[in-house]
Length: 226
Ligand SMILES: C[S@@+](CC[C@H](N)C(=O)[O-])C[C@H]1O[C@@H](n2cnc3c(N)ncnc32)[C@H](O)[C@@H]1O
Image (cartoon, rainbow, N blue to C red; front, top):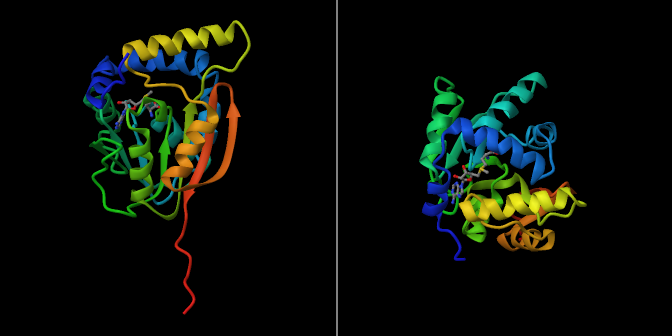
């Protein structure tokens, strides 16, 4: 089977936003073997004053993360959220209509329409394994981050849990790949290698359920002594 292009992936996401959200809950539980609470705690703290939300989908998770931040009395920030699938963005546009802190844009993560050093932070929630060009995506996210900026990402791994959970996760992954909403799960070392090759410095990492959760930063330039 050939690797899907970004347009084929966008077409695969052309389902009604409500169905995408219901389906997402099952995928989170049975393929990722993760929970919403865990995702809120993982992504919630990684918001600088100017934040890039990569592959925001319909914005369901982003909205919940912003509620979590309000509940924790964390500061309001300016968010730019991008996605390549127009049907997903349409859902996000309805969701954030009237919220001046969230700016939405149709963009490919591997060709972000922003100058170098535009953002303090970036989150890639549930999406690295959906990118057809993961190296291009990681490089461009690094480029648009400010030195010292951080990216938080969770990446779907090949199922590692015990039977029957492993078989269920494998079945969902195969279905996702056939449908085109999943490019591939990863081995932890392979995706970690890609993150480091792109130029990031890994700051913290964990494997939980079938997910690799990583926070990585863009190095600050070292001062050259005269
Ligand atoms: C599983 S969804 C995750 C959405 C959201 N972050 C969440 O957690 O609910 C993956 C998203 O990645 C987007 N995507 C895939 N390839 C992309 C690309 N090259 N550029 C931008 N978005 C992309 C898809 O359109 C889809 O909305």
